Image: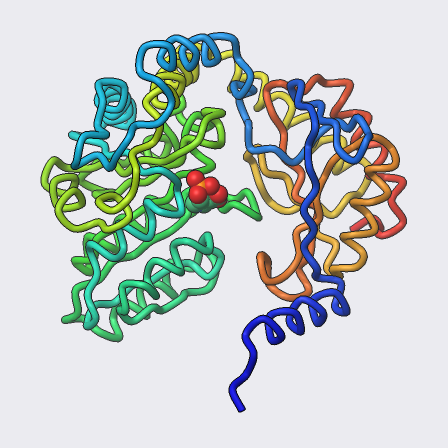
Length: 392
Ligand SMILES: Cc1ncc(COP(=O)(O)O)c(C=O)c1O
């Protein structure tokens, strides 16, 4: 007899429940800066990726409203049909200039950007080397492309080199997160770029968590590492994190972008993002470039949080970015810690396998320029009282 797919899916959910890994959806009924209302409770969020505090900025809201008045809401079709509007073109130009690339191409989400790039660049006989802790969509992209995917140990340049050398004649892409989404550390970008030069591999960086946050004007982790388009020919970043909007882009040479327009299925066969969203994102780019104080404030809060955590003996991970995970190990312990924090007015979600490796469940604490010093201090105090969090 055939397996019933829905029954099998329900059994999987049940297994996840028993292992303390069930995912639950909660509705936020109101958002006000870093404050959210959820399940009837007002909570101070330390788990948003709105690192610069731009998501509710009046300039973004104004730009969105004005563009919606002029253009309506939906773009009406894919970019290549009639969906590509001047707001998209202006945003692409600004993103290319900001990241020091010849051109940029918008995608509706980061997930789609990574799937599209991998599927356009890679073929069956090719090799794709990736950091073990890369975001799920980079891994999925390589699988969709059907190439050989090899995952090297986290941030291990020698490990990456060994993998590339297993097939010296294969066309190869090496892809890494710039800032690792669940750990917050920065990839060894300079060394990886040098390796790619030596091995004739194409280097791709997903800078979802670096854009806006790193670099003198927020250009991201690649520019902060002193690398150019020549060193990192494929740069991808998202618009839904530090820029406070939604969507993503790929930036690089004119020929890369033209190639993606020809071949990236997640670009070709989907509706273009609403032009008003592109207009709001352009306003966010301008603010992220010019309001250096947001990065300064964020850095000051990161330093304060780390110093306080060290004093309290909290088991922080080695991260200098806005992502400051507290490793708890056990999934149930991470859930219980998150629940205790909620009772004290903080929203910090537990991140559990398979999003992180087994035994590496954690509280993924994120800081934002919209937080205040006193709020960080109060969070530290609450963390120090958690039963699961012993000193290191
Ligand atoms: C490193 C990384 N890449 C890509 C994505 C996907 O981006 P999006 O949310 O725009 O699909 C995320 C998170 O969402 C991410 O953390």
